[in-house]
Every structure is written in structure tokens, then in C-alpha cells.
Length: 149
Image (tube, rainbow, N blue to C red; front, top):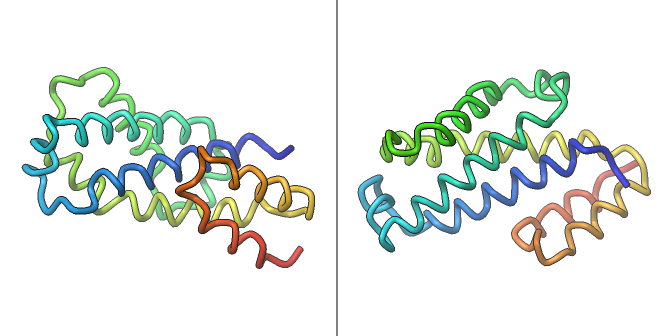
């Protein structure tokens, strides 16, 4: 169908979009931590772990070409969140979400765009994005359809 990098990038983007949903109306780290009995915070932590895990699986040479994001820090955050759950500083997590996730999103979109190099891949990717799981990524369909191959 297409290389593993695209699937990992889609997983990252879906996690970013869900974190955006969980934090959209929140105005500071304290609210983020306390709202819904920490449900939004805990869900976001798990999604950040998924982002780090998928980042590890993207080919290193591809990650190296997109240095706007320090991928080693993304992976390192995953390790910290996975192994030091009790010691997590929610203000730092809030800062990551507000200031670093937009760069991760932008880089992932650019990587996907770069990786689309055949009409078959383009068509397959559009079919995947029509899946209900990726409902938060439908904006990619127009981007992909407009790419000349």
C-alpha cells in the first residue's frame, strides 16, 4: 500500500488533532490539569506517548530532513512520560502542547506531502483518510488531491 512512514505520520497527526480537541477551550495549565477530573490531561499524556512512539518508528533519514522538530526530544518526552508518570509537571506538558505540537503537525504534513510520489499512493492515502479513525485528518485529502504527480 505505502511505506510505514506514512502510517506513523498519520498516527502522529491524529494524536495531535485529538490533543487539540481536548485542549481547545482551555486557557492555562491549571485548567488543563484540573478539568474533568484530569481526564483531558491524562488523555493528552497518552497521546503524547503515542506521538513519541510513532516518531521513533519514522526512518531516521526522513526525520533528519525535517529539523524544525527535534525528534530526539519528542522521543525523549515519550520515555519520560512512560517511565516517570507520577513526576510529570503539567505546566511543561501544557507548554509542549501549546508551543511544540504545532511544529510537529506542520512537519508531519510536509513529510506526508513529500512521500506521496505515485498516483497509486495518492489514491490509497485518500482511501485511508476516509476511514472513520482518521476523521480529524480529512483536511489532508484536499492537500493530497491537489498534489501534481
